[in-house]
Length: 255
Image 1 (spheres, one colour):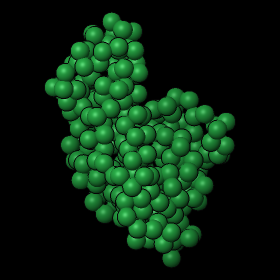
Image 2 (cartoon, rainbow, N blue to C red; image 1 turned 90 degrees about the horizontal axis):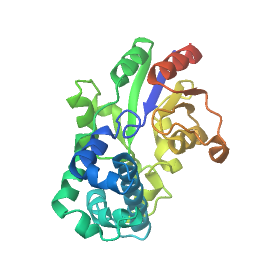
Image 3 (cartoon, rainbow, N blue to C red; image 1 turned 90 degrees about the vertical axis):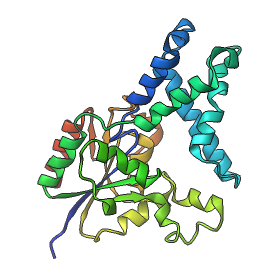
Image 4 (cartoon, rainbow, N blue to C red; image 1 turned 180 degrees about the horizontal axis):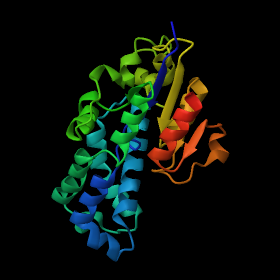
């Protein structure tokens, strides 16, 4: 049996941009933020980072809390840390919720559809691996009119039974949440040993962990700009600034 070519994509941040979220912040409280020399994009980035950190810390201590609840809760804290001395006088709960609603309107990056089409035309099976809800994540592709078979959109949490070291309870999900090896190795196990297995992401923490697990890595700087290779210390097979460049390099190396 001939070997197959597979490529697994991260979704949110890689295929999907945060532009709609940043735009919602800008439309709602942008002028007030700028009056304090805070750009909506930077505030949105800080808000997401704090929410992800607090979500992880809650999970690590056995107190799982839905990400959306954490996201809303830390809004005023992030405003305060950004230099707003009285956050609750600066913005209302309704404004917070309008900013947050932008996160549900995220869309695919330009060139994502063409990238996946070209990879398929060159013999690749395209997969996505996400820690998000598959229904929500699948909606990004549906709204963009892109065919992403449900069986190829994989949630890390389906691997909980696979990880014998995960333990029990809420903290068990940490063992299968990216960038834990328990998120990547079960994905690798879906493919034959002789197959080509690629992982592509715009998060260096994500793709470098996938390479550690055994994937060939493709990094696109479309999100982070700076790969910070000095801390991740992982050799990428492909590094590119655009989806088009990354696609062409992957195809060339996989030929």
